[in-house]
Amino acid sequence: MLQRAISPIRRRLDRSGIVLSGLCALHCLASIVIVSGLGVGGQFFFHPDIHRIGLALAVLIAAVAIGWGALRHRRAAPFVVAMTGLSFMGGALAVPHGFEEAVLTIIGVALVSLGHVLNLRNAH
Image (cartoon, rainbow, N blue to C red; front, side, top):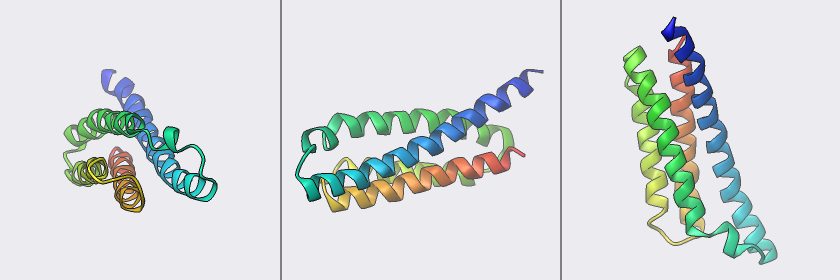
């Protein structure tokens, strides 16, 4: 009974992780286009707190959903892929704002999202 209740929660967390990853990638691309093209919004789009909060949410959701899934289905691939992505995202915080940061972040969120997708597939 408890396991049936847990599975939909984990599925929602994985889906939330995928949506969060997509929003993060969209934020990166929009930041570059809007700030570079129009010269507005730099203080908001490039504010370090947005990136720190996004990474903290990604880590929390991935830890719960993918960690939970890895314990359940005993497959390491979703965990390894997602943790690699989180490492790229963390690395993006260490470089100046701009192209390099966007590339690291987009690689990171793509890998985290893939980890969530793999986790969902292994749940079945």
